[in-house]
Image 1 (tube, rainbow, N blue to C red):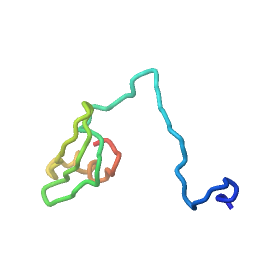
Image 2 (cartoon, rainbow, N blue to C red):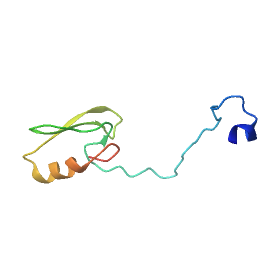
Image 3 (cartoon, rainbow, N blue to C red):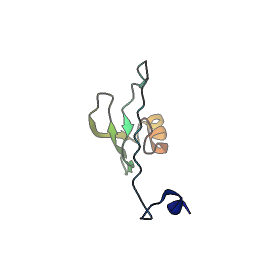
Image 4 (cartoon, helix red, strand yellow):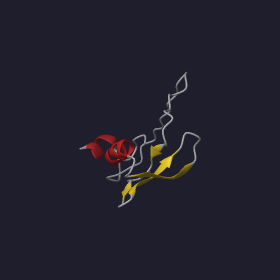
Length: 83
């Protein structure tokens, strides 16, 4: 039993770990509309998604259905994808 091996009193305990990720070179960020922060909303006129832009600001972006190629790619996008 994990709890007995650790000598823990509770069935759950916070583990004291922290992680840091560092890179020497800047990470490539595409010049798209931003990274999707929430589940996109599909409506009759198009797709609206909350995105985080390259400059760090957040906002909503709408991709209209009349832009066929952009809409097809945006429709398949999910949380965390680049729009």
